Image (cartoon, rainbow, N blue to C red; front, side):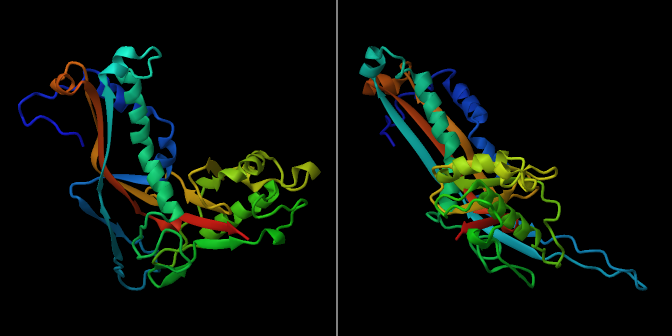
Amino acid sequence: MANFPNNTHPLVTAKGVQGRVLQAIEERPQTALIDAITTQIDADNVTETIASLGTVPAMSEWVGERNEKGFREHSVNVTSKDYELTIPVPRRLLRLDKTGQAQLGNLADQVALRVANHPRKHLFDVLNGTVTATGYDGEALFSDSHAAGDQSMDNNIDADISTFPVTTHGTVAEPSPAELIFAVMQGVEQMRTFVDDQGEVINEDLSEMVAILPSRYETAGRIAFGANAINQQDGAGPNPLASEGLNITPVYSPRFTDTDAICLFEANGPVAPFLLVELEQPMIDVLGPESEYYKLNNQALILANRAYNLGIGRWDKACKITLV
């Protein structure tokens, strides 16, 4: 962070820029993925303990009197971290700029993009394993030994593409569109087997979902998600990805470093696979030509701050399918 004068000069924020930046953050389309698979929580403490009740027990037959059944209680700690971005803009750039690139408003828009996309970057850091996060049961998001009550579940499965009944076979590096259809549906089928801590199925009504795929699968994926039939060149079999009642939005991202896997999430559920715990909303300040800082240092300064973190919410609303 820059060295500011010691309480001797007011640091005046450039007028109108902060509102422009915050509006840009709200309107960025990159936040759609975050909105779909995170539950956003305002934090009151640096470390927030997020409580989770077990699901409501199933009904049972009345036998003489009421049978009270309580909730199992779980919790996960999410500690907010401070993030900052500081951009100095020398006076000579502002004076000599002929293209508008150095205009404070344009630079502030770029800062807004960085701030808005940071949770998305953080989410992929968790998916890629470069950031460690565990859920209520102490396991990573994807694990073959998750526990709900006395139940053990696996949301980290393999899909052997050589066993799929398709006309054209590809490879793990370049699967055929039909193989991608079967791999995604294997994940859906696995998620439908999950049960809650009462032993009751929890994903029988899956409808809105997000599938994250590596960039190298985009061509095959666009065919798979857009086709009306499996092995469409032969006109064989309706495509379950295009069937009524199941809407899966594919996301192809170069941020996803797994080259042979698909991550599947329920979207827009009441409690999402990820928790976005925000201690401080994005704060953007611009110390422009009207500020004492600019006069003293011959440069403007764009500052951005955000305090938040991502935690694991409902791992039972997620599944990773690794092609083998």
